[in-house]
Image (cartoon, rainbow, N blue to C red; front, side, top):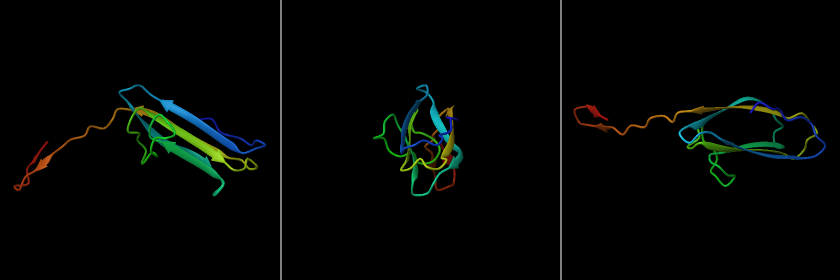
Length: 105
């Protein structure tokens, strides 16, 4: 998502739904942000809809995110740039640690 938002005459309320292939997750990175505190808001949801939970960290838990940008006023320049990459989910290992300090995964 490399498009910047520019000035307009009224408040802004934009939603984007981003989805990748089923066997990948999304890495979301903020590249650039010029926002006004208390006026502008960016929310990223971890899932396919705005009722999904907020994204915690940079990695989605599935193959989709929803980005919401809102501003109470469009009187000043507002810019943001997000970089989204599709990546393989990290491998999860369940390991047992034994009293003799050996680890079995």
